[in-house]
Image (cartoon, rainbow, N blue to C red; front, side, top):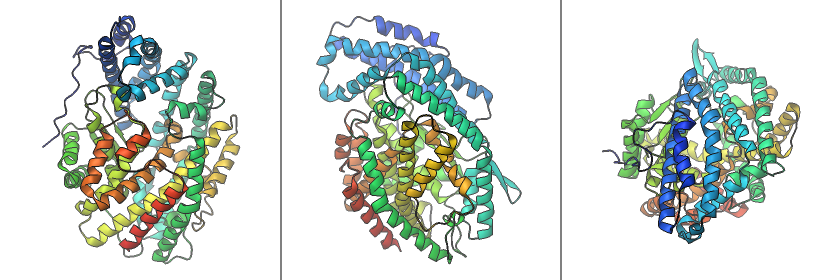
Length: 571
């Protein structure tokens, strides 16, 4: 059985329309701009037409990016995406600003149902406030430059035991009990990453300069303050982010040190090194929960079926439409994502699976994003479906923890299942210092304009040490560590999108606490919150989910203690 999701019916743009050039879509923007709006009813009809145009453009852009990331070696796919960024998106940006102003100046806008349209209109006004014609070309250039990170990273491979592996595939060797092999692979990965450090620094400097100029053009002193507004962070400020950083240092890092000390003891080592962190003790085989992408899909569907038939049907629909590209391969961009498709409604999952336990978590994570896409599809306007990232990541991270109850689909023995659950809970905690590191680093990057590469690496090391546990020895890898930030895709492609993972991780722990007490109610609350899309503020969305929107010290203390207790119960 598959979810019968109806592709949006076009009423304004012809069914056979395809977006090749700006000139193809321009007449529809012109019609909207010249439309006479004489009543509330006409305004709502106009909004539906504008939403249809937005959906058509969005889905076209998404497919161009999906195809390019699936095969970065195909120059035509790269050209197609670049053409959209340089020749289609810029005039659309100017036309969209004109429509925004038409909407906000319309006398009937004030008569729209505030409960339904408040969040949307708030975002429209924010876009008007930020728009500057000088930034159109700069933002186009930024989009093209940012994608170069994927092209550079996708070419990174190493040879292990006479076979070539992507860096994502090679990670499995770091889980082996053979310490010499682990060190050999760790050395090769670090050496390979450093080969491109100059190229990545040059690319990043260009992005920093562009982003700063965009912020200045929009009337801001720095890109951080500009980006906070652009991301629509109406519900928290820089101050709350800084409080999160401090709370992680106080409550999370001690638990992480405890985790790594236990790891050291299990491995029988006097000191834990960077190449030991993922390792299994002698005689313990690393978890291999699936054979390939096809097997991963089948088992994931079975897990989702047990959570609820609707969840399994969503993945089944994606499988039938070939909206899954899961296996890692050379020439494929790094990372993983779920890409919503505004018209079709059935999203696309992209990842780099290499048959590891981490890949199971990634699939559950992206599957949670996919569920979010499905349940929002019937919302009236495309903008209603553009949910905030703090909510998007709550959907995905909650799914990781909900799904653990049914991971016996991947792990047939009780021992393996317990190990997998323990690793997931360790990950829930150990990811938080990294989130704090990346977030604090970004605050520094964009408020210290004109810094040198040496200053950047020095500051990175200062922040990295601040959030690093004291019981892992990285001696001998100083240069690799100083450039370690270059592995983080978000810094290049989606700046400031990272604290959301921390906020949502805490929310997901709260969702899991709720699930353990009452699974049926937790799932109902989860779906109720997700189905609201972007029609409510973050605090209301989290309240609907049955949890608090709170990432302060006391909340972090409570949630981390709960996870620690659950981990101890697995031992």
